Amino acid sequence: MTRFTAVTAAVATGAALAGGSAAAAVQAAAPAAPAAPGTAPIVQGELVSAEYLRGMTAQGTRTWLAGDGFSAGSVRYGVDTYRLVYRTVDDRGRPTTASGLLVLPRNDARRLRTVSFTHGTSSYKPEAPSTDPEVWSQGPAVTYGSAGFAAVAPDYLGLGLGPGMHPWKDVPSETTAALDLLRAAKQFVPRTGRALDRQVMATGFSQGASPALGLARALQEGRDPWFRIRAVAPIAGGYDFRGAQIPTMIGDEGIPRRYRDELEKKVSVAYVAYLLTSWNRQHGLYAAPGEVFKERYAGRVEKFFDGSTPGQEMLQGLPGSLDELLTGKGFELLRKPGGSFARALTVDGEVCTAWTPRVPIRLYKISKDEQATTLNTDHCKVALSARGVDVPVVDLGDRTYGGSRHLGANLAGTAQAVRWFGGLR
Image (cartoon, rainbow, N blue to C red):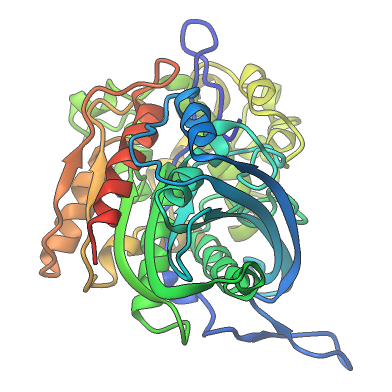
């Protein structure tokens, strides 16, 4: 399933965080990526292939969603699901391909408004919306599709059928993957006798909350000639790693104790390890793993996050606390980031600090979130409010999934967002 399996006393369910980064790196509308000499330019969002996955009746959809805790209250139609492979660019702007899920309602509408759902963290390549048939991975997109929307859910770079490794928390490339999947869906949907309307609602959970904001920013800024953002509803995001998430995970005394005591230590270990290994590939944080990881883990921690290790196996291979994982230099890097790491963390927060939404926006959070501290949402609201944006924050109550309030936010947030989107005309 598209989630981490976190260890508490024994192994309990865990999952996805969100990063935040500027959508400013998103390419212009359907841009031509550089190609090898003598070859044609590659058009971002160009459809490479489409594969029909399965269909469900309305009643079958209700039963399927309810079987894993998703609300069936908004189901009006059966659905058909497809895997799209499309051209995009990687985190360095080089041509590549990515995959994603498309869900279409079985209704008579000729033009369909679209919901883009960006998913939470996975460290294992097969656990992506278009390649993992489990309800957890596909449930949000199916929820929106069965309510009458066309729904798209990018797998991101390096997950699903995408080549290479996933650049975790690189919101510019996550945003590009989401935008280019919209373009690919626009090409494919006419084959079913319908078309996509210009209106897009953007939502995402945990890791996917920030690229939901990034996509909204990209569309508001006119990065595509057709699609227009209508509303944005990110859920339980980690929008401010520098000022909220990292200090809370490492127990910074500057963070109020109510936040520091809530985060689950094992999940924090996994996220710190994922952050350092992924961002080292992108930003060069260390010369050798032994600089930041203790000897027992230095030789294997990068393997845990190359896409080939199932999440539970990765978690079982990591220690129970950051003190067991990190060297003094590792802690120092997190406490006092400098150079390329500091610059990347600044970009990480720009989904809340560097643009002014002109469409309806709601931030969804769940109190006592054991994975994405709600201080992230608090900081995002303050930053957007400083830009004159009225940002309602919706608390999702006491919903849990596998004992996790963070995962429960995905279920409760999806149920609330689909109702809100459905009421926007």
